[in-house]
Length: 277
Image (cartoon, rainbow, N blue to C red):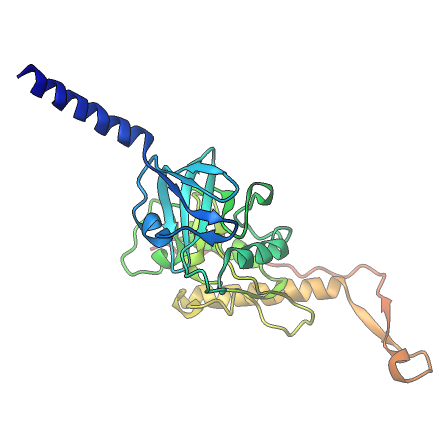
């Protein structure tokens, strides 16, 4: 009887220890080469499991923060997260390197985005990024019946501010409501593709207006954000107005620029509020 109780106690201790320390998995056997069963390991990760990479870097997984068609995001503590690619290894689209390429173009843009810790990352295998306390994403807000502790006008005014930060861009790869998250104070761009196109001409399009599923946003907001973006771009163009100058030589010689030096009148932008539900 005592032996049976001892075995039961030993088994209980074993279970507690297993849950506390978790299992350890080698995700990459060689640089850039996934270990056998890679996809299955990612699907079955449990809290406190450890994952190891080809550079011997080891991370403890605390929970899954998010999962999409291409990426798994894991909480690794200390305010950081780990991005892993879930696509087949021979599928080059939406790879981590694409994310890094887009980040290099957006990090100084003024758009609120997730910070990537490149010095701690191995882009062929994983990225260490800032952990964002996302409460919900924009696509969730657009679902009929969505409820949150925030006023509708608060969310849309913050979204208007977010849209204004994208004015300089004609295109941002994979921009859509599911990639824009609310952290309690502002909207943040969580994901993007490698294609980031900065506008060159006044009449070029706007990345935010060309966002996938833009038509799902309320009509009054779509009209407002369009007018504000156009006004902001007009203001930028006025403040940097240039004139063609004829130098009498013809050909390409006529395409010389002369800066307009006198101060330009600013376009006054009002910020009408949306009515909450």
